[in-house]
Amino acid sequence: MIISILAHRNATQRSFIRAVYAANYNKDLLNELDKELSGDFERAVMLWTLEPTERDAYLAKESTKIFTKNNWVLVEIACTRPSLEFFKAKQAYQARYKTSLEEDVAYHTSGDIRKLLVPLVSTFRYDGNADEVNVKLARSEAKILHKKITDKAYTDEDLIRILTTRSKAQIGATLNHFKDNFGSSINKYLKEDSEDEYVQLLKTAIKCLTYPEKYFEKVLRRAINKVGTDEWALTRVVTTRAEVDMERIKEEYLRRNSVPLDRAIANDTSGDYKDMLLALLGHDHA
Amino acid sequence: MIISILAHRNATQRSFIRAVYAANYNKDLLNELDKELSGDFERAVMLWTLEPTERDAYLAKESTKIFTKNNWVLVEIACTRPSLEFFKAKQAYQARYKTSLEEDVAYHTSGDIRKLLVPLVSTFRYDGNADEVNVKLARSEAKILHKKITDKAYTDEDLIRILTTRSKAQIGATLNHFKDNFGSSINKYLKEDSEDEYVQLLKTAIKCLTYPEKYFEKVLRRAINKVGTDEWALTRVVTTRAEVDMERIKEEYLRRNSVPLDRAIANDTSGDYKDMLLALLGHDHA
Image 1: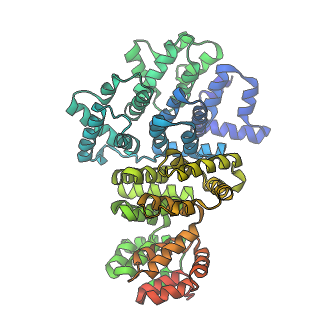
Image 2: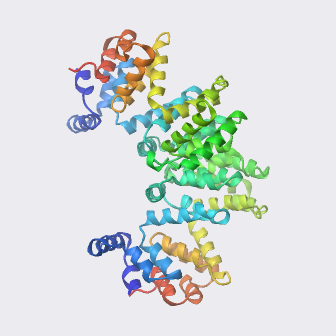
Image 3: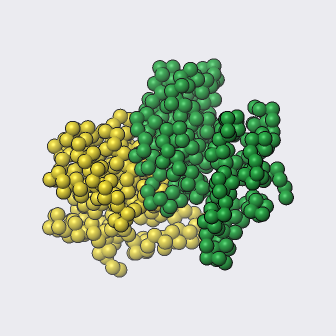
């Protein structure tokens, strides 16, 4: 019943359902669902029912509380959302937690990770398009990146500056010049040092900024292939991307795994949780 | 005529006048004023007529183009505006210049100045109030600041983190603990190294965050006392603060100089420019 109602409503409709529920019963629908449901199913329903910016604020908070590996989620949110949407998530974060995302991230990290992560979550990037790319700048900054990376100066200030402040369109152009002039992609160059945690973070940021659907495909692939399944990641990606770019992610998934995403998820999950995810993938057109 | 009309209209009314002018004559009032007026008077009319967020975007751009000393204006804008207002100025900056403030500042600065300035313009600070201050945190961060400053580690990451990410209320509490526990204010501690450009920037940021009216009083005092008068600074402070905290700034000015601000300005300027500034100070209630 919950699946058949909530899973087929878009963000505006879900927000309206919550408002009507609150007005009629004087209770927050989310709290009521929390009492009734449990486990992975509850998390999926809860994340789906939250408004997108509230949901990002919630996921970001989770990610600032658990450091290291889970900072990847912060990178995901900071680098895959359009600028204004990310800004609204930061406003929702402040409204809910009474602190800024920036101060929490800066406080809970240190060293090289902090040097990269804090500007990533701080900058209000320009949402430029391909027409606004500065080609001369792309060429000169591609050279800077190549020099720093061949010197293994991965934490260099200019390298961080370029990746954390330029628009996605500009970074895309810079990395295309990189590939054209230096033979392979920047992430290929970074591959040899890929055991290093900082380099992993750097690669993740680059991937989220330039090929978000490939990034999400990989998160799903790892979550599904993991012994026992990583429901935490699976739920996050399905609920946050269902209304954004899930069709593109499904294409990537099929291409990379030769199995449709919905079948892979169906094989790996069960019960209400499985039904919810499949409904969100648009499989179950009830 | 221009003074009597524009100087007595608030931001909403001025914006309306511009819109009506554009609708009736199919021309931008600002361009027409630009053709008719010149010099300091033109700059005063132009800055005053711009909407506050557009004006901040314009001043910030001016400041990113001229480095070193003029970066102080960037600090002034980043640290004295309420968070959301500063964010709107960043949006206006993007709309007008097709780049982000963050990328321009990061690109045009380097070294220690960049280390402090980029996070100052990037962070979306929490606009917390005194009730939301974390006293325990204020105490521990006051200790960190004291240790770093007595070690002369002015560019230390944690020192920069605290000043660039905490809310103004939290920083205020931290610096009060500093003063209570270590005998004098943080800016007193910084005084002995005040020839250093970075330390000056640091002191300016602290002053803007904690005592904006004292900061503006000092800018006005220096502008007026300078041989030949610094009209550039004088115009900026009068046009940007007239509708915000000019009464407080006047009080500070009188207290510090034993001369009312309007008299000091009247003695130091002339003609239309003088009339415009005095009208904005609310002296000339026509």
